[in-house]
Length: 290
Image (cartoon, rainbow, N blue to C red; front, side, top):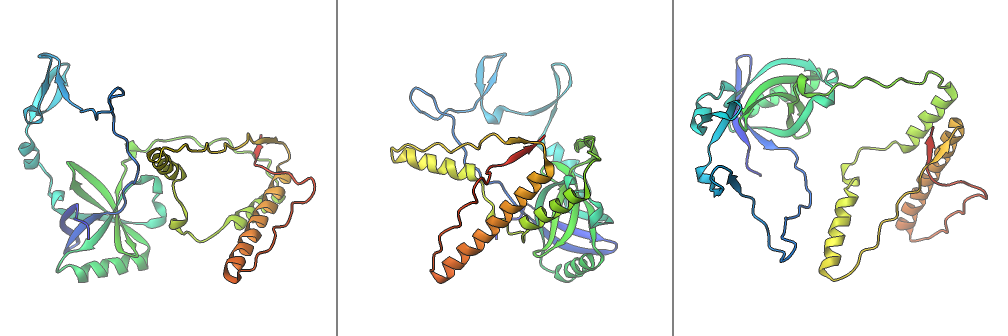
């Protein structure tokens, strides 16, 4: 198991349990180093003191807060440790809220919250109670030199913790003016289109195509080969007849699903059937609604 990023106690009421926090997700991206164009040597990032015009080593650097233009108060790391709130080692549940009342826009980072030795029973009790009541806990936690408000919710892994964006961190945006001339028949077709695209959430189906293309580019360069340019999509056609576009979209979705079922059957049986040719005059491509 990966190393925990925080350990301490979770409390609610008079119940307290030792817990550990583990990172729930991390981005996986290809990163590039900055090289000198002439000799391809990797460049170094350095801190320069403009007053003395010299490079400053890391052991010569201190933290300062600018309280007035060009004037700083120096803060020692040990002083920061002295003022850590009690939430640095104890996470107290402040209240419980209904899960469906929390807008996901407030979720920041995700972590697995696991019981430590001796905390299994109260942890299990809390998980079961949250599942049965549809509540999430709200608590406070200090880590990485910051105090977070966090959400605690039941999960197949036990319990998940999500750090929360504060109200002043969430950007507000007015809803666009909605068209009130939508016809019931159009809504009905839109429902059918949604159902045609509906499926069970399987995160393993989704991947970063651009990341894969970058890997192929790197491999091609290592092998001294060129990479073919990816075909760009055609500009969407302007559509005035919304109902016609909906119906045609639904027909295309049904055709894709039927083709997918045929492909699966061919894979299972080994019998290959030639794909059905599109009807004469059938239009292709995505359409843009004006």
